[in-house]
Amino acid sequence: EFGAHKGDWERLAVHIQDDSIRRVRFHQHSGSYTKHRQDVEFYDLTHPVAYVGQDSHGSYHDQGGTGNCMYFQDHRRFENHRLKLESWKFLLNSQNRSDELPEWFLAERVYHDGFEAPGNLRRASCTEPSCKGSDKWVKATGTCTGTACGCRKSDYCEDVAFGSVSNKKPCDDSWYNDATDTIWEGLKYASKNGNVDTAWSSSIYCLCILASIVAVSWAQQIAHEQPWR
Picture 1 (cartoon, rainbow, N blue to C red):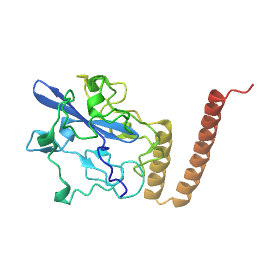
Picture 2: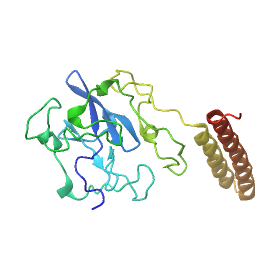
Picture 3: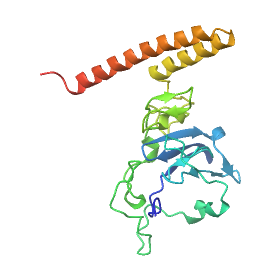
Picture 4: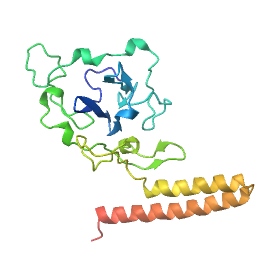
């Protein structure tokens, strides 16, 4: 059955300082993002809640998900209480070498989020970036145009280590998002003032500029990756 294989959920990381949870990092197949404590839901005030995607089994901080294939949109099925797992009751020490461990604990593989099986971990999560994945994000539609968008929901950008004590530092919007925001705001302003023709003319003009920028950007990327000989 699709999505039923064992031990391939995407992990969570919890940053604890002075006996208090400071932030939580949620992982998906092609990215991850970190939320500050105030933006995380808690069970019994002590256990951070993660909502798991039905098909991608990515972990998320919210119930969201419209069910399509876009990043962040996998169904969470949070309304089915039979699927709730109180995971803190089933913790295993990563240094455990018992003969009775589950098969996935020492699996010889690297999972989609880039980490090894729990028993094989050789790196400290606190030194990892706070997020991973910054493909194009379109604020007007709330969608990601790529496959790795974790940083678009992160309270801390990738240049901040997860174990850092720095304040919030979200990732800056890309120029692509800046351009689409400009078009969106222009449309709303012109429509509000009753000049729909001007709004559409302006939007078409902006779209042409955006298309030109994209074409130049792609050409530069291709030239950089495959220089002419």
